[in-house]
Amino acid sequence: MRIGASGCGKFGMALTADVTVAENRYYPGREYDFWQVADFCLKNNIYQIINLDIDHSFNFTEHQWRARVEQLISDLEQHGFDNSKGYFTVINEPMKYVDLATYANVINITHDQVRGRYRLGAGNEEYDLAMSKGNMYEYICQHANFEVLDVHIQSSCTTPQAIEDKCNWFKSVADRYGKEIDCNESNWSDVATPDGFNIHKAQLYKAKEIGCPNFCMVFIALNDVSKYKWLSFIYNGVARSPYWGEYLQIINAEKQQDEIPIEELEDMKLSLLKVGSKGNQVQWLQEILELEYNFENEGGYDGIFGRLTDGQVRAYQEANGLAVDGLVGKQTMTDLIIKSEYPDEWLTRLQIYMAYE
Image 1: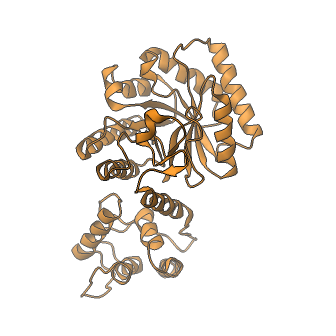
Image 2 (image 1 turned 30 degrees about the horizontal axis):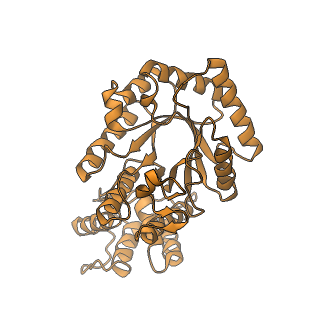
Image 3 (image 1 turned 90 degrees about the vertical axis):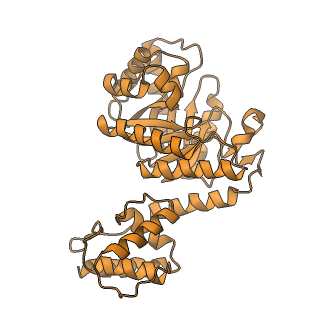
């Protein structure tokens, strides 16, 4: 998962070179800030979610909107942007400015203008506000064309139960309508406090569990916007949260997990391991759990995925913020490797075991 900041382009730089994703808002009157962020991201290989935002007046014609979208795409591509470096989304928190039918129409116009060159996202709204305006998320899925359901995990999700329930609902809508799901804005707690930081981490791990490839928060770093200082890890270049170091470790761990390839050749296939699985890859799993993570295995490495191995896998997943399902695929295997003392050796051993499966 990429982790980074939202609100960029509208609220200044609002990010550091440590992040791996930025929601960059193309907002009327703040174009200079947008291009600062865009060039910074391209220089530092930071993925961008380009938010085609609006001012409060919503005063433009279809022709003007199409021209704006097309000019922005052209300008971005001249700076080196392409569809491997990001995607577009339509309007931040739209229910504050437009009705459902108007929003769906703008999404459709944008989708037609992009014409398959880039994926398009839509949504970008709080759960509570979206529901109060007639279940916006389901409405746009039924009436608009787009690929990514962009969700906000914020003030509607400030308790563990609310995070669980509302994120599961977001995921159910995305699955029902065949949409990808992503989180381009999160956090509504003071990350300088223990409770606030823990809630933010719970949002992050739930976003990962439901399949969001990106997780943007307001704000990792912020300059001279005192109204939102309480949401930031860094303010005016100084870390205001004692948990910034820990959060940076999470960012880097996720980055490493995305970068480490588990190569599968013609005769080397990675299996999804679960209760009842047997073979060399299960043996590898039992070995790394005991030798690297101190899960005792008195019965030896028998290569049989039974109740003991299942319990150890679930304990590891829970302790490391993974989906606790007892399933060991690329995500859990990669996590086991990158957090081990000898990741290169464990990766090589897995590849050898795969070759002889």
